[in-house]
Length: 213
Image (cartoon, rainbow, N blue to C red; front, side, top):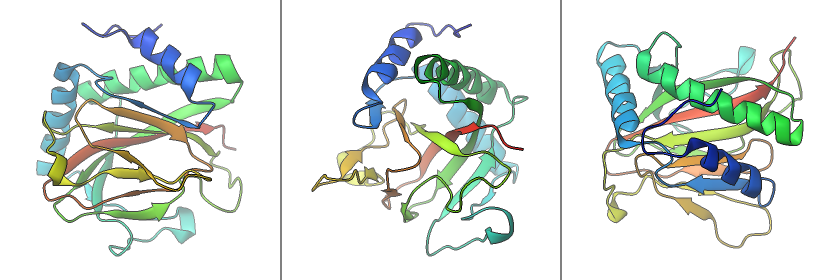
């Protein structure tokens, strides 16, 4: 069942993802989420951060996991279905996951996501979301999502853009962190990076994965 969004046509947004994502491998959806949900997610993130739930993010996983401030500088907290705003967002992403499976037989078994807070000057160096080394019992990331939770009217000179580096493109694809914008892209072959901003930058990063052991 597709969740209802007041004033927003979520089924139409899903159809746009299905139409555009296969080629070139990414789709940017401005105002994908209504302002009230963006505000609720932002408030929930800020409240969890004030409660000390967010922690410094790392790179790699398992034995290779490490915190390296020279590579990424955000604080994160994994979304929990018991958090009211997060539960609404997770339901939307699950409906998108199911639609992608029906259309493309991707075998997407789960969706995971975390709140992310970048303080002024925080960045994330160029990387690919799918971990190297093949399956490790945890499934593989197939589809990545980023949803921005900034206050309305992110200034053009504030920085903080996400840059996609598609193969064969001379210039990167720039995505401004405007609140309510949703970015959906392939996890395996799209290097990307987060540029430093001159103000706090809030978002949700998520991944649709295949089944693990």
